[in-house]
Length: 407
Image (cartoon, rainbow, N blue to C red; front, side, top):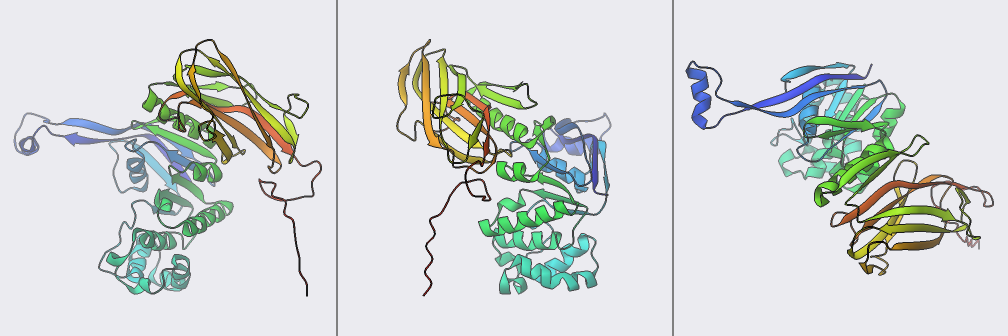
């Protein structure tokens, strides 16, 4: 149960040169008077039961079309989709809601479209109301709802019963932060119980924290698939490349990890290391111990203004801390070819036990979207262990001073 198989899927729409061409094609002999506009071509993949897969791509890549084909709201031009198990889908916000009906009435309609019986919906209504948490608005017409309120009701009814397959298209990006956390916790709960998940989102943290695998759509084709961190790194580098006319390449580091490098190449990281207090290279550090991140930059072309930034990420690729020399007001001006510049960033490793990576960026301002000379993910990997501190939970060492007053 909970399987999605997509085989050679494609979707094309007819384009007519004039409004009369369509009528002429219907009424007159002589063959087609249109051209085909392919928005999706030759997409194939399989999602196994209980697997969570993220789908990413820039606007216009074909993500929404693919989801409509998978859920059956649009028919394919080529290929086929096979699914096993019950499906709940959140595609367009409030899709299927009637603006003149109340939220409660729309719950009954949407629930029946999802395959629930009226009596089941009646029994689930208190749970749906509690999760949506919109109060008296449940009995008001949907036309007076905000987009966030529509999302609350739509998500509450779609997830009132745990489906075998849950498909979510950007819906969780709408609404307040509290409800987003609440919704993602329900998604994680479903995952633990065996629901297969297909999630479309531009939220890097959502993809990397929830999904086992990611698919990248580009220009209507499946461009790449793999581990979420690897695909998100490639996606971000691809965006920077299009802004800067650079190149994106992925390199294996010899330990099963894929390093994504992009940029125009005026400067590059020649060496990077984590040093202990004695100046020795280390790969394992103790919680809270002082270290130095040493980065050596080789300059290949004139750079009017150079900024180096770094980001420490956890094993899922979620950012722990990042800064750059622009934010610290330490940019370098008029950098010349042939220079080798060494940066040293000193800080205590106030991180929880685990494996972390460092990404580097050589840019001209505080963003890689202006001048991306080089962006390098997984430039360095290190491990933090708790050797001397009392046991604690989490990804940060924020040891408190505790004061207790007992009268």
